[in-house]
Image (tube, rainbow, N blue to C red; front, side, top):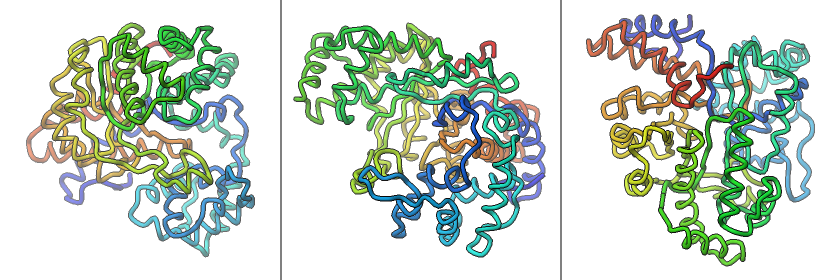
Length: 471
């Protein structure tokens, strides 16, 4: 067994090995991610290594952009008509020339572990070995056992949640259901992500609201019709397996407006007259509305605030959303969540999993909130924070106030399908190290640490995200 990420102190390392052995082979619960469900529905062979690993991964392309390599040279499609590199081998060679940029980063850790544990490729990537690694990966991708459904089964994924807009007709999920495919007893479920029909600052918001009404058969020219349409689409998502919703707002602000105030603001947005303050007010109000809906239909709410979207305006203009142009900002939770907590925070029927990109809030606000309200759970560090260092600091920061059982397990939050088992493995290794320290300091008996690591890796995410139903 590799000692990767285990404590350097021999006694703790030995305990960590034993604890990790209890969690290593548990099925993967992936309750939040961004894998395209069509990948599994169509089950087509993956493209060349560059298009599988580099082109869609903004963790990688943004690093090279920071060193002056434009995304088009890495094959990222342009929205301006500028040609993008089409030769996968050329993209791979360019990436390998700049591999040194990733020293010490979680991206390097995930990639190297993916090469080794998923593809069996142990040659160290460098400019000199670029073609050798590329050819080895390409050879594996051509084999049937490396098609998406076969890998899903090999990864031992029990539940994989994808993320879709209410405007998505869920055709890929319907195809998976029609095929009767569940990946050796596993399942693929959707997640309700309504940002593009809630955020008035989202490009084409009014038109999207109209499309929402068409899909739901409701008149979204009125606020009441809009709420009815959202409820209808939630029902469709639940029928497709959804157990949670996801809300990626700029802030964590919540607000309780009267029906008349909300309707007036909604109509202002449809007329194209809403400003940034109006948009923030409406988003804040809708979080409380969604909490009310969650109490009614049982969807677990996930709140992912704190990202300034498309901060790199040139990148957004040339390549669109979700290509590495977002930046974290300081995020306040205590006062922001108070209206929602006053209304529903003590209602055990509601579950809200709260994430942050501002780790200073872990101990100051989020852990005490989760430790004091029945409805709140802490999500794992994500995006800019999903590194071994922050995972360790997360446990150190929140356990004192929230314990282990007000946290919600790990989410891989990735589009990179082949990295899913690697990311979960890193989480399990870090938790094994943290629990080993508690055991070695005589703060936790080994048998309780053994139970805890299984809970963190497997039982907790199943319970918190209501994934315990029949597969």
